[in-house]
Each structure stands twice: as C-alpha cells, then as structure tokens.
Length: 225
Length: 106
Image 1 (spheres, rainbow over the protein chains, first blue to last red):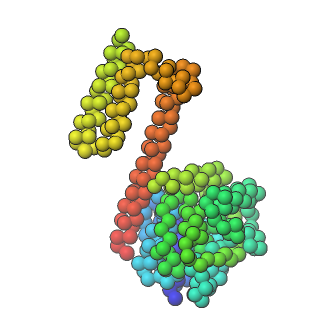
Image 2 (cartoon, rainbow over the protein chains, first blue to last red):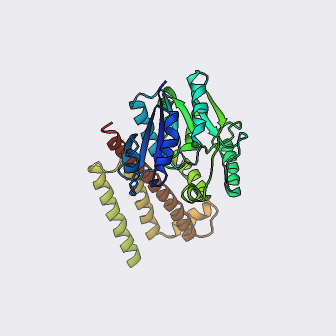
Image 3 (spheres, rainbow over the protein chains, first blue to last red):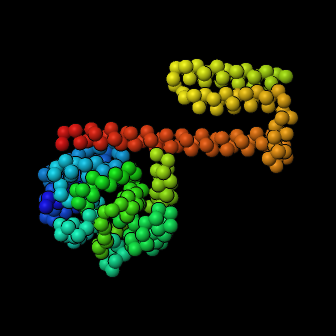
C-alpha cells in the first residue's frame, strides 16, 4: 500500500528539513504544502527531493491539508497521513497509525495525546483548553465522548476516507470539522496514543489559548455556508 | 419640516435605486421588496412619528424612538453577520482558486 504523508508548512524554514527526514523513512512519499511562506520554506523542502506544492498566498493549515490530501490522492496514495512540519509530533507513530488501515480494520486512525503516552512540555493552560475543547466537541458538535483528543493534528486515513471527508475549514477549526465528519459517517475510526513534544519555539508559533474562541466562531460560521 | 423633507428624499432615492438595481438584475425581488417595505415604513415614521409610539406600545416598549433604535440595532447586527458570512464565502472561493493553481502542474 502506498502511504503518502502530507505536511502543511508555514514559515518553517528552520525546521522543515529535520521534520521531513524524520518522516521520510516511514512513508513511501511526502507532499509538503508550503502555505504561502515567504521565508524560503518551499526551497528548503525541495532540496530534500520531496514533492512540494505551493499556495500563492497563506490560506491556513486546514486549507493546506486539503490541498495536500488532493495532491496525495492524485499521486496514487492508498493511505494519507497528516503530520505537522514543526517536528512537534513524533513521526515514529506513523506505522501504528497506518497499520489498522492496512489490515482493513479501520478507515481513519487519529493520534491522541491522552491515551497514556505523556506529552513533553505541554503547558497547563493547553491541557485546560484541550479539556474544554473536548467538552465543547461532545456537547455542541456531537463528537462521541470516547474521542480523547479532539484537536490532534496527527491522523491517517484510507484513500476512500480521504475522498469522503470533505472538510472546508481553512484554518484551525479543521480538526473539529474532520472529527465531526468522520464520526457522523459510516467510516470506521479509532485512536492510538502518540507522543508530542512541545518546545518554546513551537509553542510560540503554534495555537494560542485565544485561538479556541476563533475555532468556535469559525465552526459557528461554517453552519451558515 | 426640513427633517421630514430630507428623509423623504432619502427614502425616495433609495426606492428608485433599489428598483433600478432590480431591473439590472443586481438584486433579487425579495431584497427589493424588503427595501421598499423599509423605505415606506421610514416615510410613514418621518411624517407621522406617533405611529412609532403606537407600534411601540403594542410590543411593550415605552417610546417610539426607542423602538426605532432597537430595530436599528437588530438590523445592524443582521447586516454585519451577513457581511461576515459573505466574507467567509469569499475566503473559501479564494482558497479554491489558490488550491487549483497549486495543483495545476502535479
């Protein structure tokens, strides 16, 4: 089975090569989506020989993932893996993410930070926000309570599932949207534990606490589209 | 009297404009009718202000001017929200365009 990793990247010049080298041995091909970076991220990624597609202007992580997923399907992927380009998520989880799909037992596998493998350096405020996010996802979006990590960006899906999940949130709300679409469909899904390592640099660039409100607002607006 | 005349001119101009836009197929019939309703309502309120007080009493509001302000605030909320939604729609169209361009040579 052809496994293609999709790595959305925005202003990741200093980290993209290390992230690619970490993922490359574990997949058949990598598609990096440079989301309108102006720091030479695409050029750095191209030097490693991976496929690079470029957004002319910044459209957000959700949009980049969707573009990457379409690219992966065009390239003949049987399984599409979504993984960040900042090296925060441990790529060693990829074989475990992909295995249930290869065996034909699941259609989508999500990585979870709350299934026994402790994340390194996760701030207390992030834990609180994620807990509230989980509550919101269950009560408002109807995502099953057994889903332990509604904001995980590490996931794998079969080509069929990737075609079926028509997520439209361009920015940070895509995680919740994907979960909602998957859990309300006939797709089979599961979670596996993954390790995430937070550093000062990734925390400074990644989601802020206030972004939670933006996510809720964007999901609300999404209902009117 | 000057105030009533100015408002009447504004309402008449908005009516002329919205039906012109309707003929140009720039706005739909529903929007044109809503504008007409709003302009006629404004016209009545400008010349017969007591009408507002009468309607305000009917819905439990003390003064007609208060009713007009409340309705104005609600209308502004609706308009801002509509603008926001159309902005998001435009953003998504832009994303589609950017994606099409990004995948063109693949």
